[in-house]
Image (cartoon, rainbow, N blue to C red; front, side, top):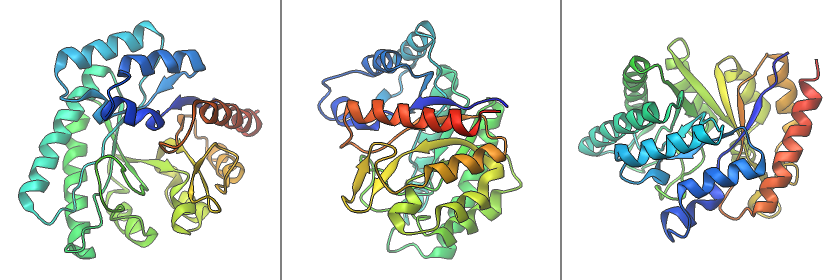
Length: 280
């Protein structure tokens, strides 16, 4: 049985890149190599204006280091009540997909949007489904897959939680694109944060799970922690994924509060579970 590989979604370094500008995206690639990751998931804000020269430079360095970039992580706000904002979001997403193509990335993470108080559930769902399916068609021309996440919140781009944080809303959206070429990026921590049943959600979408963000959450601390230190049922998640033949990337993820040591310990813990459940 083919084993998943470990990637790293270095959101814990986002402030240094986006706000402080004390490190660069290139520095992150070197760090990923040093930590022994096979791949690194890149957040769209790591590449600023998305100018082709800068994007190409990052892609070339990743290839030189032998690193794959399995996912370009984006956070469109498709539920904004302003139609002009929604149009702008789609235009930006097409630009980010162009960047992913230049980087050689096969998959782009997409969110539903924020839980705007002026957007009701039925209308929001219609906007999400239309935009995601439209984007999936655009991306397929470049042989890129669109992966929708059971997402909680983007701390750098958003003020509110995700519109589909409630599992019922996420399932309603998923039902609409289930038979279309849209896949799922499964976020292991979101159900623990929201108090939902992790395995119920995973079993509902597992046939379309193409990528995993393996973050852990401590209910006691109310924060992200190193994988294995919190309340996310990783053993059950990995057992289910292995039974279903999952062999994509699993990315060490978390929050800005995570240290480099937390990343290392997360990597070791998740690799142990991969070796356990994909032993055959």
